[in-house]
Image 1 (cartoon, rainbow, N blue to C red):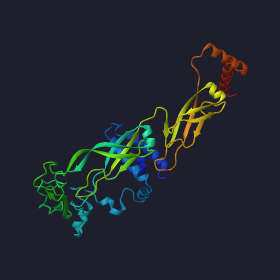
Image 2 (image 1 turned 90 degrees about the vertical axis):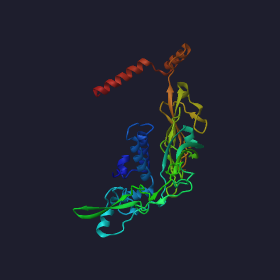
Image 3 (image 1 turned 135 degrees about the vertical axis):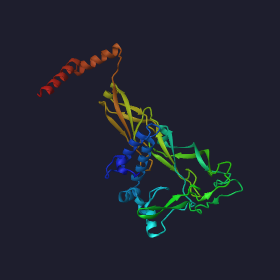
Image 4 (image 1 turned 90 degrees about the horizontal axis):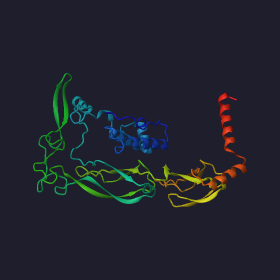
Length: 373
């Protein structure tokens, strides 16, 4: 099945900026993450979104993709290699018509192991400052008994006599177009080119065993929810002596009770009493880096925002540090003593304000708006 266009997957235009691509990925990765979405196609969609982001977030990969699409320019014509092990591909037709030797992969050639993905949930502050930790996960490891050969100790795999180690056999087929030669995976050796007469008693011929392994990792300082870390060589073991795959750790960051993060900036709602807002004050404000003093000017209104430069999160790619934004909310007391009420009435009398006058003035303004005066 052909892959969907990366821009279509993320729902962005080709002219989208890096920031727009990143925001789209964050939204969709949360939507389809298997831990949050239990739909049958959630895993498939999450992988599709992640792959699209990996391509479009990398300038080199994006440039290649914009020019060639999903076709790898180093692998010839990407549209004609299909057909599967039992299929009838372009190379088979080309070979039967012209007698040429088509390109095929040696089943005994070293191949890189599969990549693994692990979802890791961390606290807000761990994401801000990073930390060294360990994770434990089940992994396929090379069998220590047979050293990955799959054969019983003291024996070794034999070359398949049916395909002579090629892993493929030629099947001749008469068709209306003439005699066609179709290559199929050898079912005697399952395409490996080898037969194991006596299987290893530990791995039963697989060459690998599943073990729980502890891996030390460093959570990067400033990592954000949905971002991932590649740990080289910690994926599944390679095949035929090939290199191991990689481990991709996807981070999930728990919400903080007071701080809200938006990219590298931190937002904090700060409650002020009416006297503090009216008269001004100097108070201590919490930040992720510790408390700092903040001067509140007299006459501060609800919704006023104060900016604390450099008190946000350090960018995970080393591009500076964000700011903290303090948003003010004036708290009106729900219960007051008689003394407090008396002082408030005195304040209202001195300032010339009264609730009745304010209410009437506001109501008149609404009526004028409705009538169009």
